[in-house]
View 1 (cartoon, rainbow, N blue to C red):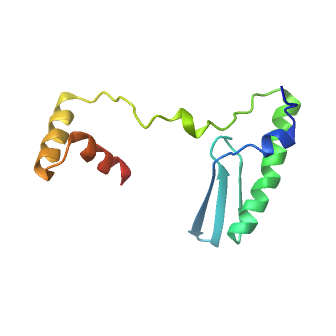
View 2: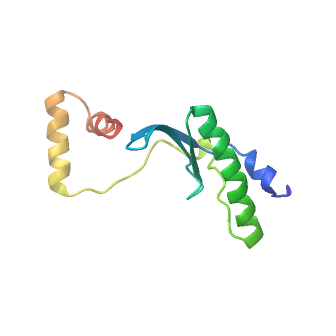
Amino acid sequence: MANKDVNYYLNLPYSVQIQHMNDESGQYYYAKVMELDGCHADGQTVEEAYKNLRVVMSDWIDIKLEHGDPIPEPVPEEEYSGKFVVRVPKSLHRQLAQMAAKEGISLNQYVLHKLSK
């Protein structure tokens, strides 16, 4: 088993999200690691936000290791099948099926279309 130190975690393929933000203080970029709750940073450019996030990420992981707290690892892409089952009320099922029929597509296609919006 690999030594799970800060470098081990920093080299894992975590999901990073960077958003352009605009508020009363001006424009900036907000970056976060999706798997690491509370691990986020910002910057004036995408590059600066990412660079700042890597510093925060290193500190975040170091503190978790120091306290013996669990550190989530990214879920490999192959663990997603693309299929899940969801239960809905009969009235919603009817409404979705009717809308799919109206559009001339399958219920699965219609729901996928609605989820992707």
